[in-house]
Image (tube, rainbow, N blue to C red; front, side):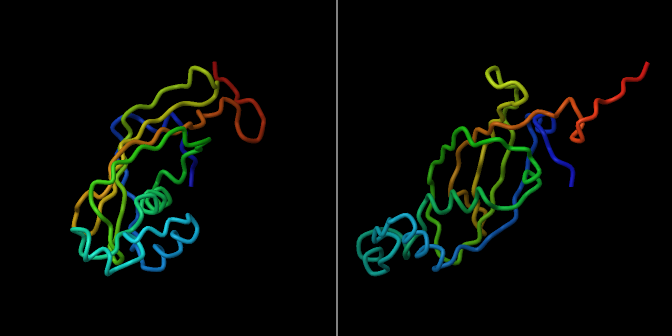
Length: 160
């Protein structure tokens, strides 16, 4: 697959990722890794007795991380770094829910401080199997611009 660069990410580009089903094991593993054992994520009885939720819910940060890793055509982007991630957690995600992300490029511009790179702002929606948006926000990426020298180091010949 050909790499994608800043120039390949015009404003308005829409991308939908692959899907993934969130499991009980995902939630408990994330609780262990993060140290977040809040009863919202670990105690079914507590959730049913004290919240409007129908059962334990996934950590918002777990859903964010999972959605960030879902495969899409953007896997080819020559990303340098995440600069910023913002999310609103607008609906719960339960074990057994299947999520995917929808990304839309809102802005793509050359960097003013890092030659050879650019900044891409993406609108992000994480959606469950029922089509309900469970998270929304923006990602800001630092992306490599298309190299002016071919990868093998030789200079391109100019015609004319």
